[in-house]
Every structure is written in C-alpha cells, then in structure tokens.
Length: 204
Image (cartoon, rainbow, N blue to C red; front, side, top):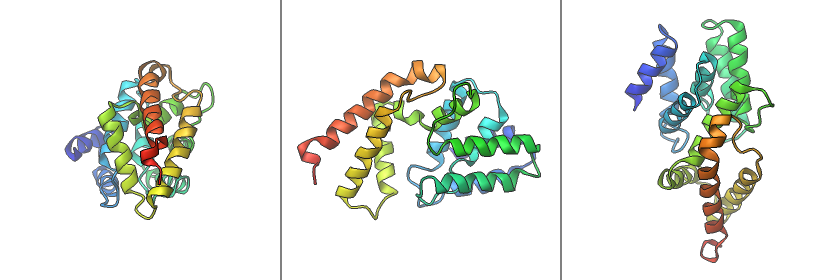
C-alpha cells in the first residue's frame, strides 16, 4: 500500500520525497487503526473519483490527519499548522493558504455553498460511510480501537451521538457526484449501525 502512496506523492510533488516519507511515517504510527494509511489511500481514491484535478485538494488530504492524537478539532488544526510550516518553502503562499483552509474544513465537514474544492475534500474524507457494509463495519471497529480508554457504555454513547449527527446532516455529502453515488449507501450503513446500537443486546 505504501508503495502506491510513494508513487502518488512523488507524482504530486516531485523532488520532495523526504516530506512524503515523513508524512507516511506519521500515517503509519502504531496507535492508528482507522486514521492510518488505509484511510489516506481511500481518501485519495475517493478524491480521484470525484474528479479532482486541483493539487491543493490532494495535498490537503495528505496532511489532514498528519497529526493524530484522537483529539477531534485540535488534531485538524495542528495538521493545518504543520502543513503551513512544511509547505511554505515548497508551494506558492496562496496554495499553502488554500491547503490549510481545506484541512480545517475537515473538522466539521460543512463547506459553504459553491466551495467545490471544500466539498470534494470533505466528501472524500467521509467516503468510507458509503463503503460496502463489511468495510464500513471494519472502519467502526478501527475507530473503536483508537479509543481504548472508553468503556463499552461510553463508546456506545459517543458513537450514537456521532451517528445522530451524521444522519441529521443535510446534505451528508456536498459535491454532486458524491451525493448521487454515495448518499443511499451511506445512509443505509449509518441507519443499520444506529439500530444495532439501540437494540437491547447492545445496551450496557
């Protein structure tokens, strides 16, 4: 998997192999179960499916979880700051600013209407919601593994809250292609998991 990512990075920013290796080392940390190279690979594939040709969008996804301490919001901000620091000598200032902006959008996945780049990056980050059920459930298991300090009851409560938030999102996806291709499958996955967690056998 990392070989394909090596090629993708070197095609994206030729001549900056060391930065790509640093990012892959971050994504490969042993504490990452969901926010690892599989997620990065899936995000980049989803972005290609959405028709992105913007370098800033791809770079933003490479950086969007570069910092991961399982602290939502803070991790994205620190990832944006890292991108600003490491890219300032590589990309023009306007592109660095745009990369940082796109990373920060992945905090709440709510780009403004007309923000096509923001829509594609946010949708790519959430593409796993529409994955085949087996992969979707595996991603949930991976997320659970990143929260070892939570009890079963605490995890269930937090997960139900997240599912309610996602199910209430209107729209769930923002780019036209993602809405058409992914909404139905994502809602099915989310609703199935929600019902399973609400069932008596899953109550603490």
